Length: 146
Length: 310
Image (cartoon, rainbow over all chains, first blue to last red; front, side, top):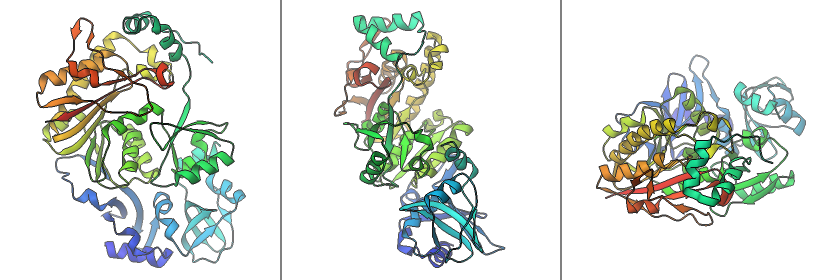
């Protein structure tokens, strides 16, 4: 499964596989978690575990589609080479408030990386000139108050 | 500007016993709002670049002498509404709340227990120092607080944690497993009065006594699950001796295989732990504990003890 996940990310965003060498993936149904490999070396017996590491993304088997989380892209998006959409100051404000953006971009339809200047903002869903907002609702609220 | 705060007479009287004439200054500081402070999260951001971009926006930043990634800030912006906060480049954390982790001095490949971790300020600070290596078990027993913990862990790009939901006392059953243990214990939160006036509205000596019993159980559990030669840091954001020196003294009497270590907090004024209170004489080692009074560094009040297991 690890190899499959890395292959998908490499093909979709051009993020080199070496970026993931220090991390393990844990798959639970469609959810994929990422954790530092050093965690695997520790004795976790008899602990009531709620979560390990960070939610990295979801893989929808039926649609053969992988959706990375905003948090994951904020870490690894800086290594991406393709399917990146740069947005303007005005578009950033709109996007962080939860709105979609009309913008034609030279990217594949599907999940893309949203970038503003040097910052990786997160994930977007691009289809035919529209970026569908993927910022989690609880995060939008914070920015919406600014 | 001082707030319209009514301080309970019992509270004033207790600290007059410790501080004497200085009590007036202490009570004055209790009424003053806290300075805003942030930690720059090096797991996601380059500190120099962040300082530069915040300054360009008119933020005034003053580096904390005791922690290279801690800054006092002055800005008209709401920090938690900033883009940098959204991106996890910065995190709001009170200055003295950064100290327990410095006392613990985590190392990259350590196996660490943060027994009462939510909302995750210290867990994420440790992860930053450990550069996402090793492993931190970030525990809490409250599902709602765990949600906040998980949110902060993910937003700050922390990848070396295991979040657990257990009563901290349960760790007494896990013998000698962790290299380091942090117990930032639930407390009467007197030191938080500058942040929230509600702290004193529910304050009572009975509450202090009740909480100190819980704290004693937690520190015993922490000692049990600590490896030999491991370090345990016990901290509270209260100044009540029953919850601080009283708890450490209890642990020293119960366990002859732990001792209190001195530790440095360069650039931060601290005072030694009290050696007596309420007719009780405490172990001499307790002078190695650190009391942090609000008036000494213009921060919230805190108490920190560093224990080592023989």
